[in-house]
Structure formats: structure tokens, C-alpha cells
Length: 94
Image 1 (cartoon, rainbow, N blue to C red):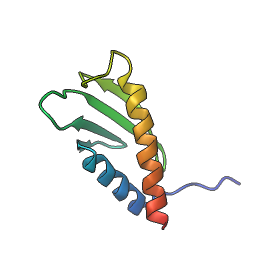
Image 2: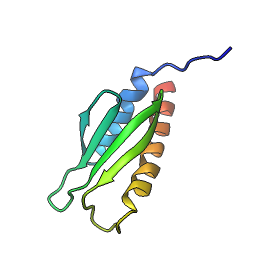
Image 3: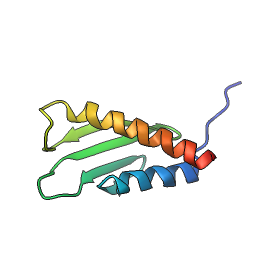
């Protein structure tokens, strides 16, 4: 019997807070979030999707982000998204 995971609203709140504190504006969709760095030289747009409760994956990265070569934005943001999601889950549990 498979146990279905549920979204922890406290963990999601902590996750959104981490995104905002790290300098991104957030636009919420159905099961996606579009993140845009705040700052005049930053024109990147990153779209992440919740693939499982409290598990996010970068599904799109476009625009310019200072210091990153073409094709590296997705990998860069994927690492941070996973880190922030894990921290949020731990903070919500503690």
C-alpha cells in the first residue's frame, strides 16, 4: 500500500520565505512558481514546479543572470531550490 505524501503548509511557507529573502519575486501558478531576481541587471526568469509534495524541480530558466554562462542557470537554480526546500522542511519540523 502506497502512502501519499501531503503538502506541509508550514514547510511551503518557509520555502516561499527563503525564496523572497534571497532576492526573488514570486508569481504563483497552479503547481508552479515563477521566480524573478530583484535588481536592475538581473532579467532572469526561473519556473519551478512541485513534482511531489515539498519537492520542487526547475522546469524553465531564461533571460540573463549576472555571472552565468548560457545553459548554466537551470543547474544553478536547481541546486538552490533543493537546498531551500530541504531547509524549509527541517525548519517546519523543528
